[in-house]
Image (cartoon, rainbow, N blue to C red):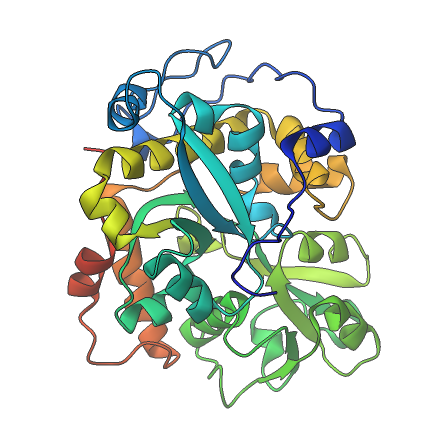
Length: 363
């Protein structure tokens, strides 16, 4: 799929009709991330309080004027982006003065970031571990918030004894591509345990939907990718979940981030602020009512039953949205770690990199 939108995308009414979404469920009261304390509205019974930034965006468009059009690139098959359709269907975007059009992007990461940098899209949601290398090349794209943690899983064949990281030495791990976030992340975990991720294991590429089949046929002893597929595959008792990206020291690390066009951040800060706030509010609501978020995501074509999708969302950290110094520290940590697996150049200064790619639009 290219970075251009479908010529006639399904309407919002179409998706509502498919999913049967006629009313907003009440939130369950989970507190927002401490990282966002003071920056987002507190949990509220009806989610109908006016947003902080609506006046600013409204002034930019003219009092009582039309909503500001925004094009948001996302992957409609990735459960980790569930905050985006929820923000659209439950009115978070509109309450912040935005009319968001989704660009379902299936091209390479470099193409997606180029689309944002050149104005074909205004913003995008994606995996930090896939975006940091292209951002090292200098794209005019700014990260404004962490969206959540979790969603990457490493599964091993019980019959092969591939149930621990140490047991994967000398084994084959099936991945969808050699630059996938799963390969980068689990390569880091292996390296931290003294297993050379390039010499001591083989990362073998298969079509995404055939990763589990490769393990079943014995061509690989493990697979690494993201939800919803890995969560669904993990239900097979023949597979063991060896690790995920909330394991050990990564339990508070974000994996999915929001990035905006640099010119939008510089020239239309109220719009950048409104979009960031709307998505963080929606992310908190995903954590508070994962069943509602799952129903909405399923209406956009998400794989899996509503029950399974809701369980996936509960296993992620949609309540935790790193911002400011915390997010910059996490970006810098990823940069230093990606040097270990030779994804980021050794000479790249992690702190300077984080300062360059992060933009604070909420303070």
